[in-house]
Image (cartoon, rainbow, N blue to C red; front, side, top):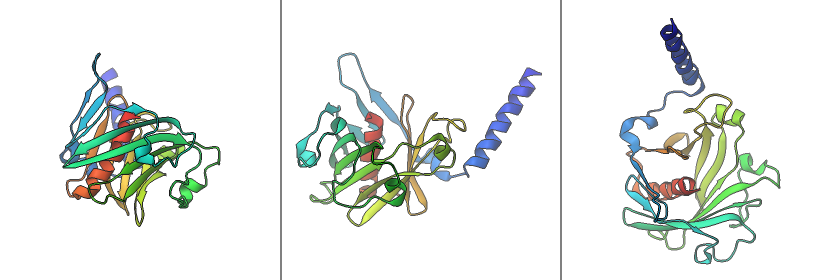
Length: 225
């Protein structure tokens, strides 16, 4: 009898999940990347995922990345992402005001309180354009936001942007379990990441190399966070 109830619970959970999140072939195995984390006793933590690898993280602000334009950041660290011929320096931190490129925030971020903390990363995409810098800006989602896969952030540069939503499709409703961040190009989902102790990454195989490099750098910031 207990096996019957266990099977019924599993079926109910699967049905509830399907109702909350429509099927998306982004999460098919063909799009999933292998992840290897090297975090030994005598070595700094580095991560290899797909065709990319990170350097170890360095605490503090690297002004060669930021240009000295950021004051009083919280929990700053930097690292370099390498892969597909690219080397992208990344500076991450937590901040309460985003105005580094003198641009307005999208409405779904601008509605946050002035005291709200954002996770911020600055990416120097030097391979494709020595003058181009990308910003990753993420707010903290409520579990109700996660239930509905609502927008929580943006990856942007001048004239281009990818929106980011967050959900708990790999956890249970009304929880922060296994938060999944989804990168969207318009209405199309192009990549997703579940950071944390057991990370998972997906990237569509038809994503061009330039986009792949930038999104991978943003995902690396989440992996090393």
